Length: 440
Ligand SMILES: NC(=O)c1ccc[n+]([C@@H]2O[C@H](COP(=O)([O-])OP(=O)(O)OC[C@H]3O[C@@H](n4cnc5c(N)ncnc54)[C@H](O)[C@@H]3O)[C@@H](O)[C@H]2O)c1
Image (tube, rainbow, N blue to C red; front, side):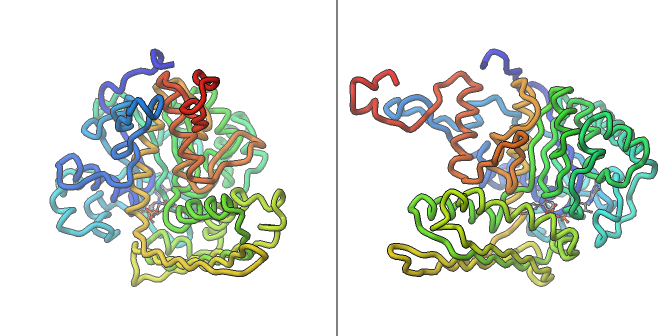
């Protein structure tokens, strides 16, 4: 495969619908790293290494040295928002990063001004921004395509990727207009309100062969029409919902409990957060989208249908409460009722004082870099190997998702090894002990 991967020559544009807390923390962070003031902690592409070959070979290169990824110095950011603030102002409002850090990269951030958003207030009622495009959904899609092409030309970019960091949209399910490209395009022309704004960006990107990753829990590219389009234009897609905070903890802890065959009666999760994301999620319709995305995780890891004695009765409850004093510094509590040998009960309590956007920004960066890599490696359609980063991974129709973070990491690493022509690692390890397995 290696010979077929195009090099990461020239500049990469990362275009972001939604220049809010996550996006501005990402952009400011990359600028700070480029200036040598900070480290890209939490980013597997920048900090992580990968084992190659046998353990005795001692080969552990950094992922960015192993795989041809775009260099941070070759990235140009842009985006859209329903508010007109430039990235410096938006970052100051988001209050994730300290003003002193933002001031060190101020110039670079001020120069990034949003483009007008493709927006429909019905999808995020708690937002009142007015910096929006006008026209039918078909016209909006054409305008977004023009934005992408202009951004590419004006910045002399070799390639572009889109990462949705916009607000969570209200809950919706796929209907008949989402089932094929033909039906979707007709619905665009009809200005059908069932096409969510995020789908307009995704359609525009895919039509141009631009990879699209979805950081929010709304369906967006997770509909047959856009999967079909991604195959047609040979474009990678990835979604959905950045795996941060409480769900990150769940997918770290739950596989451990399942591995030890410890039972779980109940898992109660509650959060308080006070950023704009929290404000949008305060609307029950928007919360429902998030809830659905978060709920599936435990079911997939514990598989109650296969293990009814251990997980058949699990009660899983999730709450998100908007609490402005905490800003982006989300606080979450988990109470986990577990049971062990002979059914004896135990409890685990987790109190995670996390910073949502600090955890999300490196994920957004890695998704952008890996989607660009996937495109250059001639991969298209759903990129399940990126499920490591996602709360509710998109898969092929009928294929159950893998939510165990450790299996997701193995999948990601083996995909990189496969694409780069290295041996896959099964962790069998018998070859270190027995002749018969020497070539296994
Ligand atoms: N922060 C996290 O840890 C985290 C984790 C997982 C998922 N997410 C998701 O990522 C998204 C962004 O989170 P955030 O904390 O940055 O939220 P935010 O509210 O700070 O930023 C979202 C931005 O999107 C803009 N927006 C909304 N609709 C838009 C549209 N149609 N076009 C362009 N811009 C639009 C809003 O005006 C806002 O500025 C949310 O959907 C959130 O649920 C965040």
